[in-house]
View (spheres, rainbow, N blue to C red):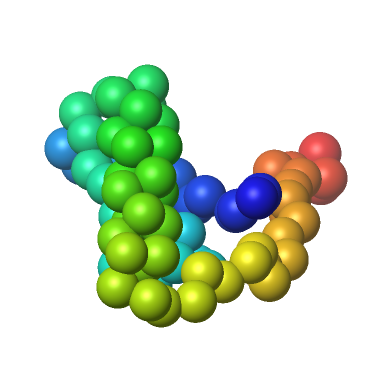
Length: 76
């Protein structure tokens, strides 16, 4: 399965969550640590859902990257 993972920088490190797996989150001091922790969290989360008989949602999130040009003063 493929899921969208959202990674966010904070003042103290990074956070991660999956919109399609509510409650599956991870936080870490570094981006690499957070990626490792969310990978483990997803596996545990899905295993637990299956264990208690809950359906495991497939990815329904859509995404795109929006880039804005820097605000440039064109008057000289």
